[in-house]
Image 1 (cartoon, rainbow, N blue to C red):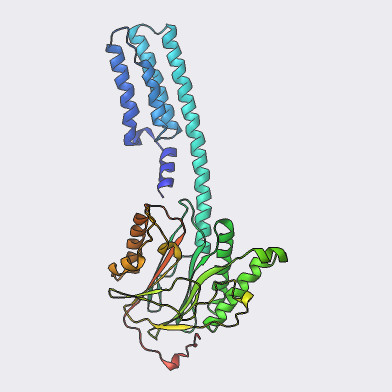
Image 2 (tube, rainbow, N blue to C red; image 1 turned 90 degrees about the vertical axis):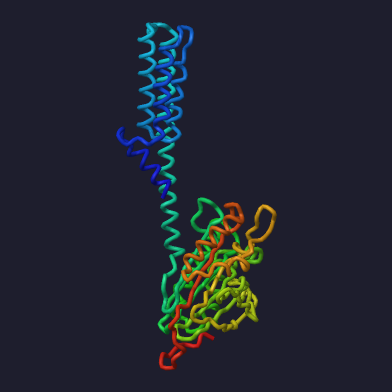
Length: 387
């Protein structure tokens, strides 16, 4: 981390390892000292020495700042001695001012470094929380090559309302969840953790995708409303759009349930195929409230060499300064690299360039390539029908 490197450089600085920028205040001290001594008696450049510790604060820690301050004071004393004016009130006032300014600069460095250490600790906790909640996706799962990308809208944030997760079943298939929780802030993070926890607990043991969807909807509704009064339950809506997928190892298909989420895309060569479900169900958290007792599974071809793209609306609804949406479906076919990680790097750079580095909403993308060599389904494997 660049932040950590800067902090360590300031705390571990030694005179023999000064950064290149130290030549600026050091050169200033030498220049002022030489020019002031060689100038006529009515010209005094000594007050400029105060700039040396002030400049050092911008790139160095307390010890280097204190050293530059001490050198500036020593230079002022040397100037006074060489010009024979050390005992004058003017020179003594300049020396006192240099000492005070240098001390203030050192105090500023100490306070700043303390705040930076606190910020580093907070960010470390945030990173640990992200790794626990939004775990990195497995690079390989059966014949699948998987990569995930998460871009928070807030620059210093590590986690928001977008989520993804993967689970390997005992029946030779991989289950994937991608979703977007309503809202932002701590409430969205809490619901994100809830949905991810419910998926990880049940994805490997629920026999079918509809049962898994029912479980997620029930768990989400129960936890979100158990402490609310009836009046609060009527006025508060917690839900998450999501897509649930089951990808068998030995059948070139993908089974999915869409719950109000943008449709996945299949990238087959340079051709992009939207997987638009015939029945898009209500978001997770609202299904049970409207009496939905079952979910419809759609099945689409997912052949060897195909790339499956899952994404949240933070990608397709990202606007540039002119209000134009990011043309995701136009850009994605341009990146036909075999490596899903490389594709996501291209996507991240292109998306951030489109919005000039600032997203209005979190964005998450999962890229899954089915590697060549997967065989057709074998009845002896005993795969469960995800429907």
